[in-house]
Length: 212
Image 1: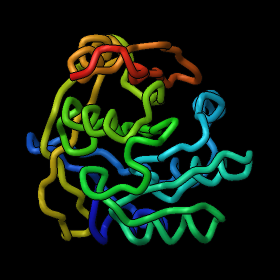
Image 2: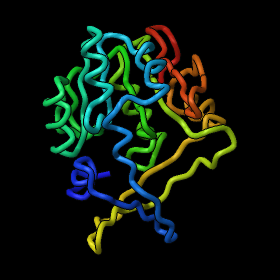
Image 3: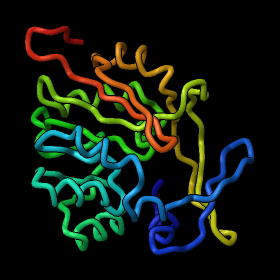
């Protein structure tokens, strides 16, 4: 979710998401500004160092830093990066598909708050994430509930007559993460649910394991 409307939503402005089929729903950016039930289980599974992809205002990046884990957030929105830094976290304005520091050396890549949908192509995203991980490293990802539709769609943001351009986003059900992981050279290690949220851990094989 990019552009000035997303930045405004982080400052409390009411912004909606609109899909190409006409559905709309509120962009609940406030959820990314405060600790949420279920966060702790994700954070406890993050190894040093952790890359928080689509880190937004940085609540998870900052929480990891406070517990002594070297953490870096990356986000394409400058306002989100500034908020992370103001809160005491390290963050860069970067696209995960572009240059990312430490490629091939991250212990964990964190895809929280539905960020497995970045770019609208979960296969491409997980292949990229696999490149960023060290052998034996893990992805900690948040997913949709069992039975939810795994899909890609075009969406945009709107507020008071202002709109962004269309961009691709995806949703992935926990029911489909096994085949997706297999296609992208990752191995499902764990799945769990807490507070109505669903999560998984995927590992990159160590040297000597299967490679794509």
